[in-house]
Length: 340
Ligand SMILES: Nc1ncnc2c1ncn2[C@@H]1O[C@H](COP(=O)(O)OP(=O)(O)O)[C@@H](O)[C@H]1O
Ligand SMILES: [Mg+2]
Image (cartoon, rainbow, N blue to C red; front, side, top):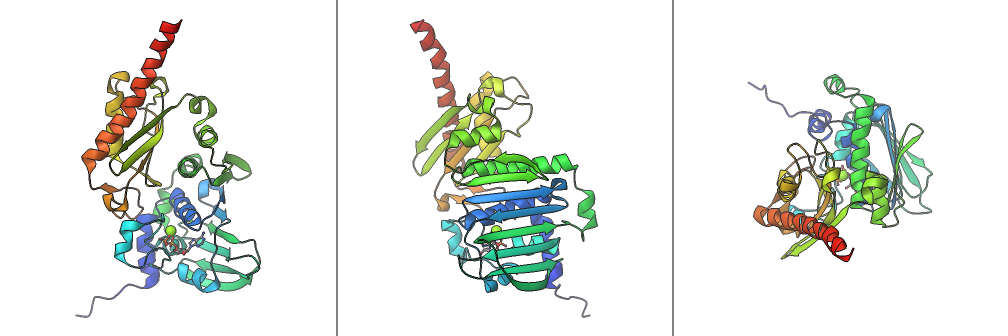
């Protein structure tokens, strides 16, 4: 009798962190999505030891006042939705209000934020989710969040970390994807003193593709485009000779969100079917835009997966977009031959 108790807030946050914060790259994803939601146009990420020792994200976004900065660390606190109906018309990447609480629960956390020029900033420090200090601070408008010693209080998770280069490569991949989804935003990734990635944020997609995928591949990509009722597809695909032995070079975005999607992958690969040998996978960057009522982004705590309401329509649109571009490309050499 009387054995059941409510867990403490700190314990609840630590448990939730297990779902959302799997590794350093998960922290970077959540922090960068927050920076983008805050309207940042310049975001710098600094990591040490593959993010295990330190992750620092600095943005020039809207910042927070003191009350919001304290509130932001509470679980289920968000400025982005007010009620569940808002989920159908999301304009932001975040909405669950649990990332900062989760990250802070498993790290040594510092936040410095300034809401608008001339106003006083706030510096907040927390350890294992417990706020240690809140002070006034001066800084440029925007927000800097520093995470040290991720998982210092979750030894089981620490053991599961991969090598420094591997964790760093997950972070670089992720920032590359975000950069492709937002060519209008400048991203910089520094690993120690080494600049791993930089985009200018001028909106020039060719420049971003070149920075993320490499110059040689970027100049050889084929553009795809397709429109159907309530659905728009755009992006770039690699020629068959640029196919890979794994699917790491397949990047899918749904309404601006980077997602994993076996459905999009299957449609893509079906279009390449006769062009590639077994176990070779096409390179692709595919953007799908559709109304919020046609896609559920709230199926996974990390929002890495989405549920489409019309899967068949998505599949055939992706298939057509890709196969049209491939067909068009095959026409080019035959026309050339005629002219010669
Ligand atoms: N970089 C940032 N700039 C401005 N506000 C931020 C930033 N990061 C977080 N916030 C604020 O803190 C809140 C909580 O963030 P988070 O826990 O990630 O939840 P969510 O993004 O789902 O709202 C956000 O809703 C936002 O108001
Ligand atoms: Mg968030």
